[in-house]
Image (cartoon, rainbow over all chains, first blue to last red; front, side, top):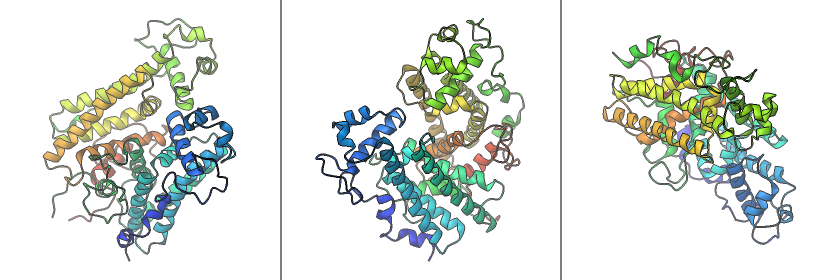
Length: 241
Length: 241
């Protein structure tokens, strides 16, 4: 089974990054519920929005309570504090990445295919968990939650760098660029999507997330295909031999 | 004359983005000087550092005066206020980009070569003006200075998109990815360098800025070469025909 065959299987995708959970739906991880209007999931969605707009450090409890339209005490019905919201939000993005990474590593396929699977999966997580990934990519490490997130990010970066190196040893990746730089450029491109990708917007890859679509299928339609086409094969057109 | 021939000419480079101006050197644009310790140039360098660390909105006049070790009034010996420092800083990065853009447009070369020149030049500006470009890329548009900067950024983005489209019409760029997306992915990759590139750091493209070195020259040594190799030709190795 190749990476692409695995990637086209319909079942695994919706689970990645908990994409299928509706923002205000029931949340199995939230025992502390009961407050009308918000459950932990919908509270988190609003908190992440405010964190992204104002920056986590600049967001006060007052900012959160004002935006939510509930008293501060009602927020802490759900979570112990602002940092717990941050941690839950960062874990949401990181769990998505971890799940993709685990799947990629389990593939019985060459390193370059596992790398492509990782890129497609990460684009998919970004598309379905955009506010959470955006928050993660802006983390500076001022709190323990942020430092833990940075450590998990570093594990992910190491996996990418290892895959690039292995693919280079296999002779599948250009040897004239340092593998560490190649890895950073590749995920620099992927992560830059948070700057402009907006779900639902037509015309600029705002189509529904299809990050795990098979390679080579209508790149005009899929953001992951576009990323892989440019990253793996370059934007310069080659005349067919 | 091709884009690459132009790019190898030694003279134009140092002028781009005022790369050659030492941080604390004399500044012809600063008539309001006289305060010992800081001229406008060195004041700006420290202010940008603080803006990048704390975010512009969260930086108070007190933060600036504490970091500079001078009274608030001494800062306003040089500039009218915090926003003037922001405007000067953003213009520094944008002037660098504009200069590269003007040179690229004046080249008597196919669109794809002008595009590559633009990428190399932009990488060069990023390397020599890293704190200023970092600040520019984080701008949200909360002040007039930021909104003006975003307008200038949009002009630049439009030029990139036009070049990509022209190169696609020339048959030099892959037609299976929307030109607008190609343009964003390309500069997403370039701009992501601010996340990890640190001048002077060896091993990870920390070599001296050589963004306008000729294409194909030791990509292991030049960051611009690495970016162009991955972006234009892709990271997948092609077996030579």
